[in-house]
Image 1 (cartoon, one colour):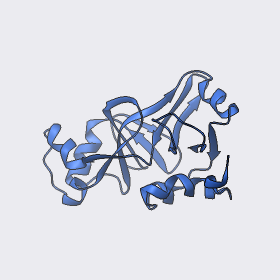
Image 2: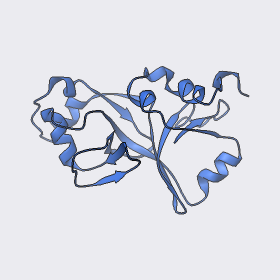
Image 3: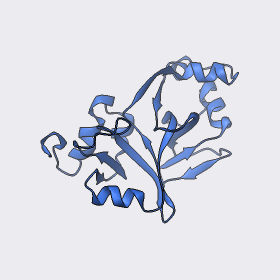
Image 4: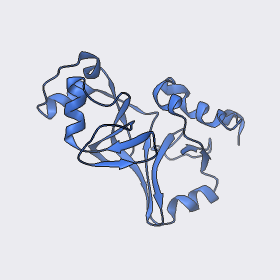
Length: 172
């Protein structure tokens, strides 16, 4: 699922945010903001981790701000496939990996077919996200792989809402 910040949500971390909700259970929720690009390219992460660069297209890939929690930690949303040390299956087609081995594979050009690299995540404690949804802070929509991988960053928030026929800019 995506959760989309309602236009009235004023929190600087989440204003106009589109978040891919990776895990949601009785203990809380974890998501990755998909529409906040950082100033970094993936080559900077490769260099910080002493990983040789074998793929120039991977080196030039953007790095995103995944949320305000643990911004020093990398998260890779990717199409399912490959065997990585620390992976959370999200669905049959998508996974979230946090281990070094996937970054090494991406640097060589041998990583997943499609990937999205972010630093940090958005997290909610037990019952917190449910309360925020009841307070009309978030709109819940289906996940759409084209929105994550093919839609320009500045359109992801509105396009995620458009999936359910809502023009988010007209909501109050």
